[in-house]
Length: 188
Image (cartoon, rainbow, N blue to C red; front, side, top):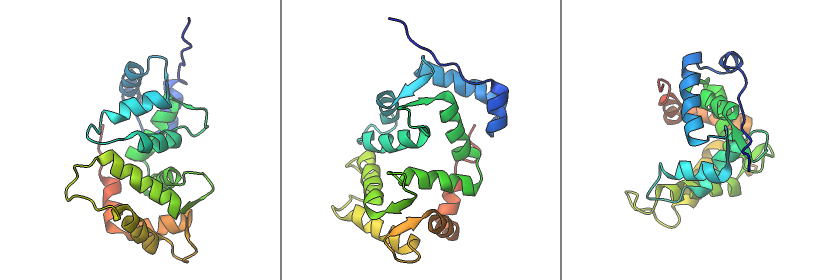
């Protein structure tokens, strides 16, 4: 049986498309190839890699949503180009780019809106990923409370959905969200 390998576009092209230097791209590619020798990662492998970061919880559902956000072409696999493009936005993108990417992650069904059901799915996935040993101990209704607070803040016109514009505006008004977007600014 032969394994089909994917070779990424030229580094110069990726350097022009991302906020990474050629050297940084080489380091990222080595790490990617080490975990994914074929040059492509499928969802199951992605989940296994991601789960290693959350040993006390179940990261599979959140990893599924994250994988779908990385897999922008919905092919069922993430190539190095997909991975590095997302990483470039998350680590070095503008505030607007980071928020748009996050909105896309939360918009599970890709209809251009975040509804309460989607937000509940995301929040539950985050709690599952963190595990049962969080402090303080979470109550059963904590995810619902977080979703209600999210919608109180974000759903400006109270129509039961959050649009990209509402999301962008609300996030930019929130000092904690704005500070959290700067956390990984100097990584790499």
